[in-house]
Amino acid sequence: MDVDEIRETLRARTGGTCEGVWSAPGRVNLIGEHTDYNQGLSLPMALPHRTRAAAARRDDDLVVMSSRGFGRVLTVDLGKVGPGRPKGWAAYVAGVLWALREEGHPVGGMELAVESRVPVGAGLSSSAALECAVAAAASDLFGLGLLETDEGRAALAAACVRAENEVAGAATGGMDQAVSLRARADHLLLLDFARGTAEQVPAHLDGHVVLVTDTRAPHALVDGQYAARRRDCERAAEAAGVGNLAELEVDDLPRLLPRLDEVAAARARHVVTENARVHGVVDALARGDLTTVGRLLVEGHESLRDDFEVTVPQLDVAVEAAVEAGALGARMTGGGFGGSTVALVPDHLAASVERRVRQAFAAKGWESPVSYAVRPSGPAAREA
Ligand code: GAF
Image 1: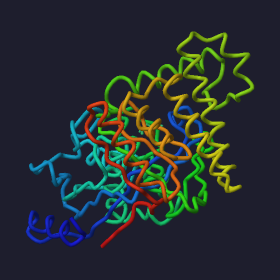
Image 2: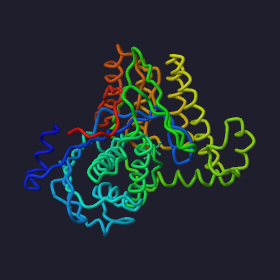
Image 3: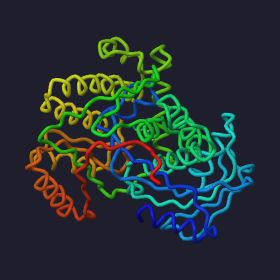
């Protein structure tokens, strides 16, 4: 649906009222995985794939929403939103308005028609894109002015995280919402969760493309595995005597790991080495050393596979096939347990890398993966 179509969809439903259209991107993370809730570093970028929301204010507290693909129009009373309520995709919409209100913003009911062009269930943050599109619409329509500054955008991201953690019940860390609201085209976003900073890093990828491959292996963050990893990390930090794992350096590991149980040690090793890899990638990008970037991506994947144990065979095979076909590096991206990979590929090899990954999946009898060559795109914004 283009902007006119989604506006007309809302108008048809409301009898003519639509005050504007907003959109927000999904994300792909280049490196820095499972670090956000450990107060570490990550380096995501916004995807060109966006979720659109046509919106209008209501003069009561009802949130009336429809989504292409979900047929039914849902109505939620904002006064009844809270931890665990409502269920399903409505939580990501009404939850954001609830969280903004909880933060003291004068937000009321809304009419919303949404459409996601971010592949759902692919580990590319379709939930964050939905939350951030709604947050952007609410900010403009209720005069919050939060889209105007990076600080305001950080506040909107925090409300989206609250919606996801408290209302939808997914214990996620905040990377996805931060990049959806604070990204810049042609840049990666260096997020430091301990300091609360977001720094724009020019994506000097000359002659190379970022290839995202949706493995179609189903992925969900509201199941127990993601939360279990988070608990492992908390246990590891406690046993190591630090507030969070980002306080540790790679040099601390030989001394500290023997104090931890085997699982906690492996989780800690992933997080601490992953933070170091983020620094390594940022430095290598600044030098134009894409070979080193690629090597660090592969090391990151191995760490997620062996120490953090969040990959599945489809992710491992997609990474191996991409590297065999000439990618400088590849890794799983996002929460894992299914979802997508990201690869750094010389332009002229993009088609053969894509083909090789498809062939490897066909040989295993798996559903065919879908690849997208992407450029770092812009943040949540008003479109009309
Ligand atoms: C998911 C979560 F939503 C993020 O907060 C982050 O933890 C990521 O998994 C892993 O890096 O996308």
